[in-house]
Length: 74
Image (cartoon, rainbow, N blue to C red; front, side):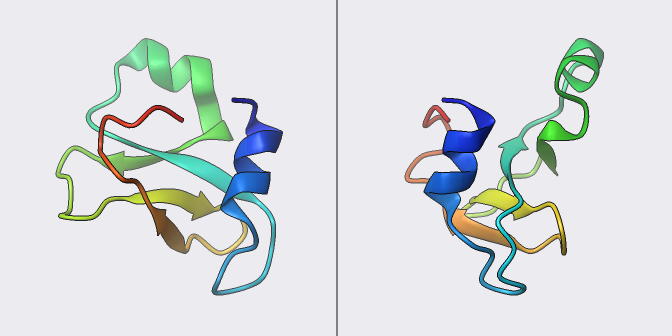
């Protein structure tokens, strides 16, 4: 899935209305992943909440959308 497809799937941010969604990746990233993805993704951290968000708004930082499974592919 391309980043444009991800933004389309995410829809507008519920907080600010922007369409600047980034996929929210959970887990401790390896240095090469941080280099590879840069700021095109948002890093959620290594502690998964019960319903981890799927996206983070690139404009305001709001986390939204719920992944059906933490291992669900983007």
